[in-house]
Amino acid sequence: MTDRCPSCGSTDLREFYRASGVPAHSCVLLTTREEATGYPTGDIRLAFCQTCGFITNRAFDLDLIDYTQDYEETQGFSGRFNEFARSLAERLIERHDLRGKDILEIGCGKGEFLVLLCELGGSRGLGIDPSYVPERLDTTADVRFIRDYYDDRFTHLTGDLVCCRHTLEHIAPTGEFMERIARSTRASPGANMFLEVPDVRRVLRESAFWDIYHEHCSYFSPGSLARLFRTTGFEILDLALDFDDQYILLDARLGNDPSLLPLEERVEELAEDVEAFRLHHEEHTERWAERIRSIHQGGRRAVLWGSGSKGVAFLTTLAIREEVQSVVDINPFRQGMYMPGTGQRIVSPESLREERPDVVIVMNPIYRDEIQRDLDRMGLAPEVLAVDALVPANGAPER
Picture 1: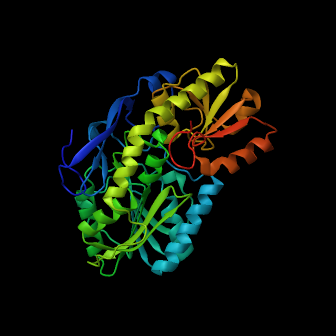
Picture 2: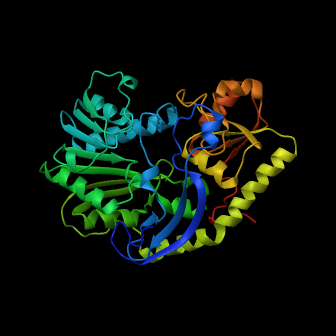
Picture 3: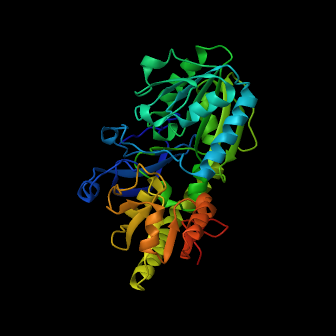
């Protein structure tokens, strides 16, 4: 149990959320229901640093974490997500003049984004990730991969752009990790840094309990992320929200310009969001539990659409088992597997032709239109309910 902020070292941590017995991993491929329901669990004890605004899981257990080739995190089977990824790649190429350059991606997953950057810009890429699967990519781009964790062995590796997307939220010692990245960046004079993480302010304001899970041990707001970067020797070039304001995008380079950007909030402002979450999340959780019970007791069939981390957190937090019998996912590598903790089978969209659900609960609202088109194509007309449906505009559960 950590007593210091991993971002700034302060002992001024205030715990505000607890959950016990949650799956250690959310995106792991499990081949039987027995394996899924017996999957190892950990605890969550979210604490807010009142000095820098960083939020950490004090109960995070690194011994439970193992990112292997069975960790299936990719969103690359979604047209909506691919539109975002391509637009982001094109913007990075223009902003950092990434044509014929060298790109290092730390935590590259299956490597799709690095390949996209190199294909569009004619660049050379190096990706580092323990879950990389060689046979998943078909490209002629000049890209190579190291299937391993990024640690001190690799800080001599660098590029004209050092890219790190959706990795820092999985790292508990955030300050130490950013020091490593700074060393990689220093190895190439003039190198730029790009980082992308989820925005915790949205999670707090929506009481989005489905966005809190064990392997996400670190939670950032724009302000707390910028403060971490400045502490480790970077100056911020750009700070923005994207993907329906779910993601923070940060561009930086080594430097000491302390100028604040418009998106950065004060620690006191973030503290208000933390307090609102503390006051409202139990009520919001119970409202969703009641909605699921009502659907089930009324003889209606409900399915979740989205078997990733949001779906796992939603089901386990609400302790849902027979009330939702299956979970839909467009990723063929996840189909036929089982949800960690609760054991629902993961099925393809086409299976709904036979299952014919009355309610489809969409785990990420940004995919609602894409999902609706799939349902229309199959001639299905269930009620489509996005996971944020019970959150009104002011961020507190509706009454």
